[in-house]
Image (tube, rainbow over all chains, first blue to last red; front, side, top):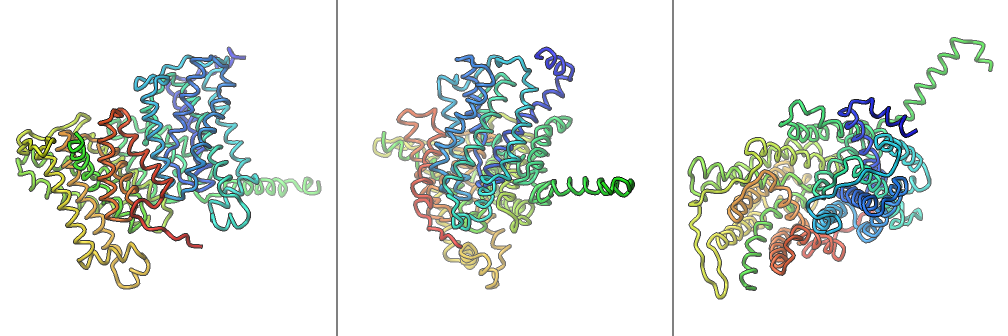
Amino acid sequence: MGHFLQSIVGSVDPYTLQIIVNIGIAIPLALGLNVITGLTGQLSLGHAAFMSIGAFIGAILTNRLGLPFELNLILTGLLTALIGVLIGFPILRLTGDYLAICTLGFAEIVKVVFLNLDITNKALGMQVVPAKTSIPMPIYVWVVAIISIVFVTFLQSSRLGRALKAIREDEIAAEAMGINLAIYKVKSFAIGTFLAGIGGCLYAHFINYINPSDFGFLKSVDILSMVVLGGLGSIPGTVFGAAVLSAAPEFLRFMSQYRMLVYGALLVCLMVFRPNGLLGGVNFTGMLMKALGRRASETLAADPKRREL
Amino acid sequence: MFLQQLINGVALGSTYALIALGYTMVYGIITLINFAHGEIFMVGAFVGLLLITYFKLNIFVAMFLSMSFCMILGVVIELVAYRRLRRSSRLSALISAIGVSIFLSSLALMIFGADAKAFPDDVFPLRQIKIGSAEVSTLQLSIIGISALLMLTLEFIVQKTKIGKAMRATSEDYTAAALMGINVNRVISFTFALGSALAAAGGMLVGLLFNAVTFNMGLMAGLKAFAAAVLGGIGSIPGAMLGGVLLGVTEVFGVAIGYSSYRDAIAFTILVLVLLLKPTGLLGQKIQKKV
């Protein structure tokens, strides 16, 4: 099984593979932020901090304890979520911009702490030994990405998801309807940070080297841009945003030195001309149903016998 | 020792205060965290550096020209990146601001390169003055003096002039101010111009203080100044001044007692604590929750 998958991965051009895996890693990260910001409406500017927490926990678990990767991944996600809850519980009382700033401040603190801890090898960063698994990392990344898409899709229409949307639309009305704001916000934070931790863990084991400076404010902005680019709260939008923004640096490579310049200008243009994101407000399920429905009715019209069935 | 560190702290803090004022004024009027503000600070430093190095201008003339340049820059940024987003969600405006910030810092990287640039040595008559037990440089004193002067000017503009009155009215109630015949767009442009000018001055002073101007100096300074604005109570002008100075002093003392590798974390720890204990900041007004 392992050899077969390895041969599939080996047949892909390494450069393309790198881009594909980057997209796959970005998906759980962006979906996690989408739960916090898109679904619950709590703006977080410190998502990269949870990614770094996940990356370092995952790396330490592999390097020191040598846990099998499956267990490591889940444990990392849970530990990151625990830290997320511990942090989220006090700060989620804040609303709007204050929350955003608090998460930003927290992210900087995490970065500085990691830069000073011995266990994370200070500013030198950590080498991560290869993950203990027979399945190649690119396949792993995409399996996790797909599971997280499915998970968030179900979450969105669950009872919890509807409560979170109610909080996003109007906190006071939601509270009046009996939704316990504190508990639901912390739950959404836990789910978001869980996904961020998993994304970070995958990142650490794919790149095999992590440095606290890689998870700064700009990384948080990058993840937030993915969510906003596609359209807040929209899962296809978030996946699309993750794909476009992970691949964008590669496609903009031909103008290497102007790359960030163009990226900044693009962000501004996008926001000015489509403030709700590229796919914001597009109803995908509706479009899909409509497409299927039309096709179904066309085949019915073409084949009168089937109409009787 | 104590006095020495206090003066160092106040000098650093007054530059934070200069930047924080721009944040707080913009936030007070259109409730936008203007992330590009830190980059305006950086551009101000670079423009000043260019004028002094290549045109051999006097430092004060250079500072004046750099402030004027950044005024225009601030107004243009508002016009291009924020004006059309005023009615859409705050998040879109925030992302747009971040886009501007990335754009400006990478532009500076392209033009000036990645290494730190220094001001020429003879730009400022540097002398050490003894005050009690402390050694203070003329530069530090000038920084404190110039910042205080600029802040007093700002306070005068906001409290005593007609446009200042319009600014206060607009931050009180945007719609009502518009209905009373205040040209809100002009007030907002003016606010951006004022804030950017202060940031440019701050940028030049910081460049002189550390004798280094880099393309990425805006990000951290901007974030810290923002922390200062929140500490003082965002939207409050005296609050930003107080917050900036307090933050600078705390940071310098934190470094002095041996937490130098945690330097950047100090500002943000204060920020998080303030937000948790008194979310409106030291001098901020309580915001009524509207149903």
